[in-house]
Amino acid sequence: MGKILLVSDSPGFLERNKSFLEKAGYRLFTAATAMEAIERQRNVRAQVVIAMLDLPDMGGDLLCSQIRRDPEYENVSIILVCYQSTKALERAALCGADAWVTKPVQPHLLLREVGGLLNSRTLN
Image 1 (cartoon, rainbow, N blue to C red):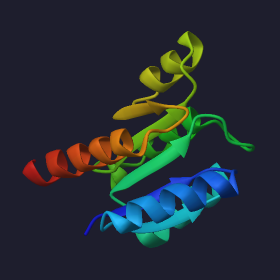
Image 2: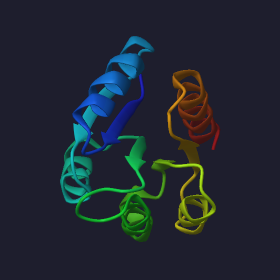
Image 3: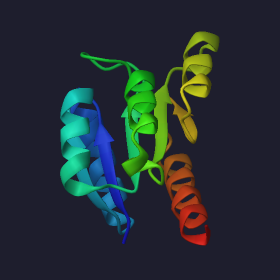
Image 4: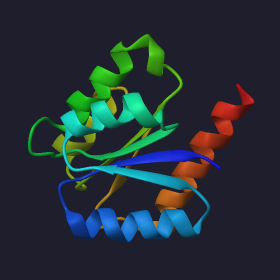
Protein backbone atom coordinates (compact mmCIF):
# COMPACT_ATOMS: atom_id res chain seq x y z
CA MET A 1 0.00 0.00 0.00
CA GLY A 2 1.56 3.26 -1.15
CA LYS A 3 1.78 6.36 1.02
CA ILE A 4 0.69 9.68 -0.45
CA LEU A 5 1.12 13.20 0.91
CA LEU A 6 -1.61 15.52 -0.38
CA VAL A 7 -0.79 19.25 -0.12
CA SER A 8 -3.43 21.97 -0.54
CA ASP A 9 -4.85 24.92 1.37
CA SER A 10 -8.34 23.93 0.19
CA PRO A 11 -10.11 21.72 2.77
CA GLY A 12 -12.58 20.59 0.08
CA PHE A 13 -9.79 19.48 -2.25
CA LEU A 14 -8.03 17.63 0.56
CA GLU A 15 -11.16 15.83 1.77
CA ARG A 16 -12.45 14.89 -1.69
CA ASN A 17 -9.14 13.52 -2.95
CA LYS A 18 -8.12 11.95 0.36
CA SER A 19 -11.36 9.99 0.43
CA PHE A 20 -11.04 8.93 -3.21
CA LEU A 21 -7.42 7.80 -2.91
CA GLU A 22 -8.04 5.97 0.37
CA LYS A 23 -10.85 4.03 -1.30
CA ALA A 24 -8.31 3.04 -3.96
CA GLY A 25 -6.15 1.51 -1.21
CA TYR A 26 -3.55 4.20 -0.52
CA ARG A 27 -2.54 5.62 2.88
CA LEU A 28 -3.09 9.36 2.83
CA PHE A 29 -1.51 12.19 4.78
CA THR A 30 -2.34 15.86 4.30
CA ALA A 31 -0.69 19.25 4.68
CA ALA A 32 -2.16 22.72 4.15
CA THR A 33 1.13 24.49 3.31
CA ALA A 34 4.44 23.68 1.68
CA MET A 35 6.33 24.11 4.95
CA GLU A 36 3.92 21.74 6.69
CA ALA A 37 4.42 19.30 3.80
CA ILE A 38 8.20 19.34 4.24
CA GLU A 39 7.85 18.59 7.94
CA ARG A 40 5.20 15.94 7.34
CA GLN A 41 7.34 14.25 4.67
CA ARG A 42 10.19 13.89 7.17
CA ASN A 43 7.83 11.92 9.42
CA VAL A 44 5.67 9.88 7.05
CA ARG A 45 8.07 9.34 4.13
CA ALA A 46 5.39 9.31 1.46
CA GLN A 47 6.26 7.75 -1.87
CA VAL A 48 4.14 10.27 -3.79
CA VAL A 49 3.58 13.96 -3.05
CA ILE A 50 0.57 15.56 -4.74
CA ALA A 51 0.72 19.34 -4.34
CA MET A 52 -1.15 22.34 -5.65
CA LEU A 53 1.03 24.56 -7.80
CA ASP A 54 -0.28 27.61 -5.95
CA LEU A 55 0.11 27.33 -2.19
CA PRO A 56 -0.09 30.17 0.32
CA ASP A 57 3.49 30.07 1.60
CA MET A 58 5.51 28.78 -1.34
CA GLY A 59 4.55 27.50 -4.76
CA GLY A 60 4.25 23.79 -5.37
CA ASP A 61 7.04 24.19 -7.93
CA LEU A 62 9.37 25.52 -5.22
CA LEU A 63 8.28 22.71 -2.90
CA CYS A 64 9.11 20.25 -5.67
CA SER A 65 12.54 21.83 -6.22
CA GLN A 66 13.26 21.72 -2.50
CA ILE A 67 12.33 18.04 -2.28
CA ARG A 68 14.46 17.29 -5.35
CA ARG A 69 17.54 18.90 -3.73
CA ASP A 70 17.37 16.51 -0.76
CA PRO A 71 19.12 13.20 -1.61
CA GLU A 72 17.04 11.48 1.06
CA TYR A 73 13.95 11.95 -1.12
CA GLU A 74 15.38 10.99 -4.50
CA ASN A 75 12.76 8.26 -4.96
CA VAL A 76 9.76 10.43 -4.10
CA SER A 77 7.41 11.03 -7.02
CA ILE A 78 5.82 14.47 -7.28
CA ILE A 79 2.56 15.36 -9.00
CA LEU A 80 1.56 19.02 -9.28
CA VAL A 81 -2.03 20.19 -9.66
CA CYS A 82 -2.44 23.35 -11.74
CA TYR A 83 -4.65 25.25 -14.11
CA GLN A 84 -4.46 24.57 -17.84
CA SER A 85 -2.41 27.66 -18.69
CA THR A 86 0.91 27.93 -20.47
CA LYS A 87 2.57 29.65 -17.51
CA ALA A 88 1.34 27.08 -14.98
CA LEU A 89 2.31 24.12 -17.14
CA GLU A 90 5.78 25.59 -17.71
CA ARG A 91 6.27 26.03 -13.96
CA ALA A 92 5.23 22.41 -13.41
CA ALA A 93 7.55 21.14 -16.14
CA LEU A 94 10.60 23.15 -15.10
CA CYS A 95 10.71 22.24 -11.41
CA GLY A 96 11.31 18.53 -11.83
CA ALA A 97 7.80 17.23 -11.14
CA ASP A 98 7.18 13.71 -12.39
CA ALA A 99 3.68 14.57 -13.58
CA TRP A 100 0.97 17.17 -13.38
CA VAL A 101 -2.78 17.14 -13.59
CA THR A 102 -4.98 20.09 -14.43
CA LYS A 103 -7.91 21.54 -12.55
CA PRO A 104 -10.59 20.50 -12.17
CA VAL A 105 -8.95 17.24 -11.15
CA GLN A 106 -10.42 14.18 -12.79
CA PRO A 107 -10.13 11.41 -10.17
CA HIS A 108 -9.48 8.64 -12.70
CA LEU A 109 -6.58 10.64 -14.23
CA LEU A 110 -5.06 11.33 -10.83
CA LEU A 111 -5.36 7.66 -9.91
CA ARG A 112 -3.70 6.66 -13.20
CA GLU A 113 -0.77 9.03 -12.56
CA VAL A 114 -0.31 7.81 -8.97
CA GLY A 115 -0.46 4.16 -9.98
CA GLY A 116 1.94 4.66 -12.87
CA LEU A 117 4.48 6.47 -10.71
CA LEU A 118 4.32 3.93 -7.90
CA ASN A 119 4.67 1.05 -10.35
CA SER A 120 7.65 2.65 -12.10
CA ARG A 121 9.39 3.26 -8.75
CA THR A 122 8.99 -0.38 -7.69
CA LEU A 123 10.39 -1.57 -11.02
CA ASN A 124 13.57 0.50 -10.60
